[in-house]
Every structure is written in structure tokens, then in C-alpha cells.
Amino acid sequence: MTDKLLTMRNIILYDSPAVHADMLPLSFTRPVSDFRLGITTVSEKWQRLFPGNYSVHTADYLQVKFRPQPTDDNWFVAANCVPTPALVQAIEALRPGEALILEDGEYVAFRGTIEDFRALIDDALKPVQIQFKEPVVALHYLYDLFLNNGAAIVEDYKAMVAGRDSAPLSATNMVIGPDRLPSGEPSLFIEEGASVEGAIINVSEGPVYIGRDARISEGACVRGPLALCEHAQINMGAKVYPGTTLGPYCKVGGELNNVVMFGYSNKAHDGYLGNAVIGEWCNIGAGTNASNLKNDYSLIRLWNYPRRSFLRTKLQFCGLMMGDHSKAAINCSFNTATVVGVGCNIHGAGFPRPFIPSFSEGSAMAGFRDVDLRKFFDIAARAMARRGIELTDDDRDIFNRIYEVASTYKAGR
Image (tube, rainbow, N blue to C red; front, side, top):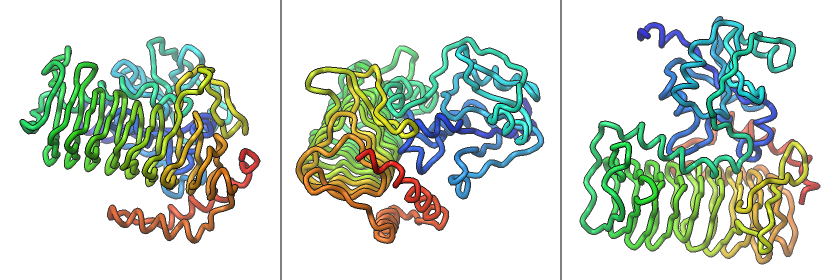
């Protein structure tokens, strides 16, 4: 396909209302296409495999920041679906008025105008349906992120390092495992500017990716598949197990196992976090532990926002789900599969209930109260300014909308 045609192709990653609701609280502040899975976000995966002009169609209140940019001819692609070459080929072949569906009837893509797409979402349009029969990873709940993260790291890794040379590894480190993956890529890749000293790196189960200007400090033990994104840090003596992604500027210590941290969040000290998903601008204090397994080994129930109840899962392992700008003080404890909303501040002894609504502050012993929004904005602006990022008026508008709906979930305390 020519460069001119690639430039003309207009792709809109969309959130279905059901998926966006099931992905709360992480989707309170972003479209699902901006969720990090593996090394990159879902959007970045699509842009790598299916070039074009990209925008987003998401919840109405988020469109002050994430706006669709439709033309007369658009490819609308479900943002919760992870692309593969075969899936991209099938979507590329769609004609105007055609939709690609999975075997269960779930829409993957539609080609047409924005008016036709909105009619499709409202069930007022019946397009020509083409079934895609190959397997597709489709994210429906937050735990789908950590369940699929290890495999996603491997796929991102192979695409990102193919044909490239890694920066050299210092002789102070120990590497366990083969030099190369079965597919031929090196099993360890270090971007320019990264610092790795005195670490034990095990690549026997999967590759380890160390991003630009990232750091692994002395005494850390890490095992792949592992993704350490740009400017992220693993502190001295940390233990990081497979299936873990540390997004840009994250800083971690203690013990982590199969954790996805979107970016700009810290768990810098001792404490355990496993089978967890952590948003941006979160801080988990020293000595804080989050359970990921019930004492009786029974299956997990996880808070679901649209149902306003705890959803039964088939999982035995599930840890902390934490929305953006939430914080836990030192020595906090979380029950198995605790869901923490946006802008929460948790402190004190005891186990809080396994659902903490957005903009709640307090402890299990003293109870919770509402966070003052002006105070929240001050703290958020200071935290973001440390990374040279501004809390914009659009951000404030989105948080105001989240604050308005947070009260509807207070009964879940």
C-alpha cells in the first residue's frame, strides 16, 4: 500500500459502553486503548501493525481530552481487542458498511461514517457481518490485563527488538538462561541510557526488556517475561517475577509478581504486590501488602462497577486493582482482590473492605470520608509537575465528572 493511501486511512479506536464500564476504575480516566499491556499500550500495538491516522471514540465525558476525528470513511476498531497480523488483514479488507465479528458475535471492527457507527452502537444499524474465526485476545475485565501480560510482553518484545542491537550489559550482573529466544531475538535487550548493575536476571522463562534511561539496582532479582519501560526503576534487593510490566517512570521495591503498572506510580519499598493492576500517579507506602490468594483457596469475587456488586470469577489469584492518583500509606493491608477507585487516600491499621469508592479517604478502623476536591487537585498538580506534566483544565473537568458519579458507589463501602 502506498504512503498516500496509508495517510488517508482513518482509524478510530472505540470503547463499547459495556467494556468501558467493566474496566472501571482504570477507565475512569482514560480510554481502553490507552491501557498498557505488555510493553506498549493497546493503541501503540494497533499503530505498529495497522498504520493510519488514529483517534479515539470513548465515554462522552472523556471526549474533552480524547476526541474522535472522523472523516467520510473510517475504520472503527474495538479498543479492547489486541491486534494480530491476521486480524489486521481482515479489518483492512472491510468494505464500507461491513463489520467484522468474533464467533460469539462481539464486534471487532466496522467501516463507515461516524453516523453509521453511532447507529450501530445504538443497535439501529444492521451491517453486513463477516466472521473472524481465529483466536483474539479481547480484554473485558481488569484481570484480563495481568492474565495476558506475560504473553503480550513476549509479542511486543519480538517486534520491538527485531534487527536491533542491545546496549551492552555490565559485567557486574549475572544472567541465567539462553542468550536468544527460540524465535532468534536476544533474550535480554537494554535500551540506550539504561543502567543495570549487580542484578540477577533470569531469562529462562521469557525475555527481559529494559527501556531507555531505566535502572535496575544492586541485588535485584528479576525474571522474564519482564518489561521495564523508559525511566522506570527497580530498587536494591527487589524481587520481580514474570509477567510484570513497569510503565514509564514507575519505581518499585520489595516483591512483585505478575503486576501491570501503567506509569508514573511508585511502590518503592518492601511489601508484596501480586496479580495486580495499578494506574498512574499512585503511591504504595513502605511495608504495604496486598493479598492475591484467599486463605481458604476459594475463587475470587471482584467488585464490578456497572453491576454495583461483587462479580464471581474463575480466578484463584487476584490482587489489588487501583485507579489513578490513589495512595496507600505505610504498613497498609489489602484483602484479596481489593478494588480502589480514583483519588483515594488509605491509611491506618486493619483491612478495608475490598471495594473503596473514588475520592475516599480514611482507614478500616476510623472509617472513610470524602476527599476534598480542591485538596486533591493541589496534590495531583504537585505530583505531576515533578515529571514535567501539567494538570490541565481538561483533566480537572474529567475529575469533576468522576467526583459527581463517585457518590453513586458509596454504598459499596
